[in-house]
Length: 308
Length: 295
Image 1 (cartoon, rainbow over the protein chains, first blue to last red):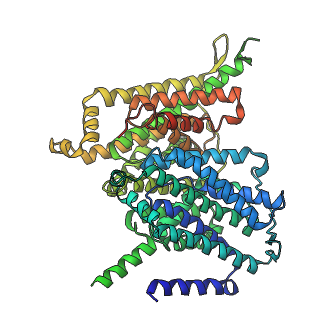
Image 2 (cartoon, rainbow over the protein chains, first blue to last red):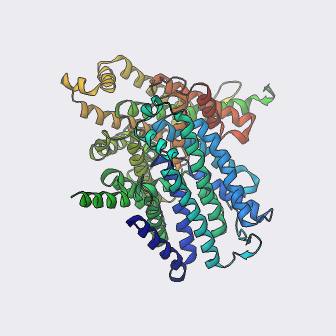
Image 3 (cartoon, chains in turn yellow, brown):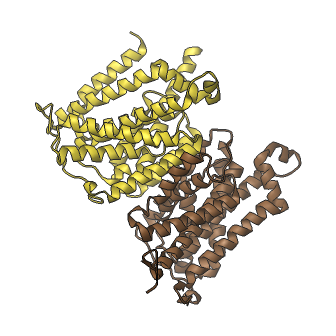
């Protein structure tokens, strides 16, 4: 066994033990946002595309899943799959428009389109505007396993997280992932080697959107609410910060970053607007001094000592 | 009552005026973004927040120091410009060698800080700011009533936009600026202080946002959140117009404001999304933007 496998095993055992030590709701929130950040990282870290509108997938999937579970009475796995599917479709159209522009324009286009989804959610009747969808039933997994218990729900969320994380891991290490990385490193060269760059970008975008949707849908069941906060531009900024803080382009970075930000918000929630200020300051510090992020910095240090 | 396309002409002209006023703000903000982007290659996410600072400063000047609108019109943009110069000197300067995305992320962080601080101090509900007495009342144009203050805003921003265009396209200083955009190293070799030019450009760009904020203060409520609502629309405007051309960003801003206003008359449900829909259409037809050049 190499070091990476051991690390994953330790993390897995820790995740299994966590709900008996920590507070399951908090842990579930961490897992959902970690998956969201991992999905986002697939774009920024491995394809080099900065989407500033990922909240539209996260938040919209939360609404769709909540509606399916509460109003239509679907089982949780169907509701989540439906939410994920819907965001994959939206992701296709958004990506199809956005890949026409590069760099910062890409960021602005995704931001503008996510604002459009936000206004749609404000106006559409099924989202209940300011109130949001509340007390969403968790239901029974496959009609058998009752998820109302927080610990059971935690393991359900953990299973989804591991599945999503594994999928991202597979994508990154596949030939497809190698092409994405080559686009990140040098787009003209990838193009000249005969890769249809726009198609690869679009596929990466749809995958990332669907996984962000998966995270959002799971979150709405775990916490029982879907609100406008999930779909607003602040949320898009938050996921950027999580990934930046943890380390863009590292596999575990987004998980670390998401846990750190969620923990911070949890402990500082009494401080009101200071949370926004602290998050802004974290952005500034990360960009100016700490561009590798937490995990990126650790990897860099370890790599240095290994090569000595 | 006279009607136009089945809508009373009063309502139609009223929304047209509101659209024109919004368009004037979009034009000033996207102009500032374009000037900054041209020189610094940075998309200034803090633009909306600094627009809010402009409005807030003029409100604070009146409340705490009793300084009236006319002085605020000069002082607030200077305050915002100085703030911009400090931001450029201490932070943005270190990012020019890096990917443009870092500039966007840094200014996003700054926007959060500025907005959070003002929200902490003054809450998120707005405060009214009264225009000077001279702007009370309306002009009676026969077919409609034009509020005097709105007329002033459109006029003032048109003058500012045209003056900016003139300075950049027709004067020696503008020529340095355009040359610096094309090839900063060469311009520096000719003995022009390019880093200073860059600082001044950023200060000027955000100063324009501050000025727009002062102009906007009597129309909208002065609140900590006024900037974040407008910046995303302005980003869409910039995508539609393309940031390559000064005149292009002015015209696109005005046109989109008017289109938004008219949508409020004919199909109110779409008024908040129409700009984004137009952006999507423009991306399909002319990905580089209406006035943009493919790079």
